[in-house]
Image 1 (cartoon, helix red, strand yellow):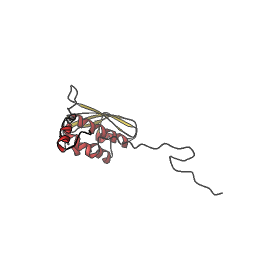
Image 2: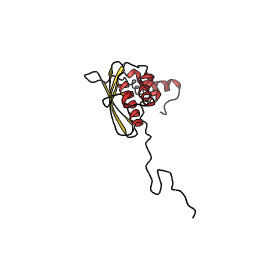
Image 3: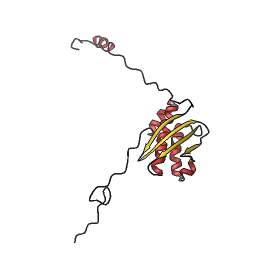
Image 4: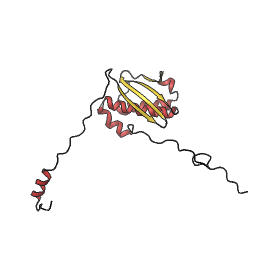
Length: 160
């Protein structure tokens, strides 16, 4: 590089550099039945999620969404990916969830639905990514420590 003495020399040196790779072109990933599959995780819950075009029916562990997730907040969590991607009522969801509690399971299904949506239709990825739905929420319960009542709570201190 010591032979570069002018701007023209610099331009010619830069022109001979390796070509820049093209942007990643994402293709839809669907099975022979036209479904997209993804695994979602949250806390200790793991959800296996299949989505296919439909009218917005959500089935979790063989039950309707309203029956499985009775709290409106949990139902809202499940609907978030569709709202952000602006495809409400266009996909049917079939999910099986295991582990954790209802809150973790709702988060796992949301994560799985988001991943499956971006696999089914790659153009939805930027909206889901910007909302943070494609990232696994890594927060889990802190373990209990010895000499403590819980993870950080101490036993009551007695002076005498």
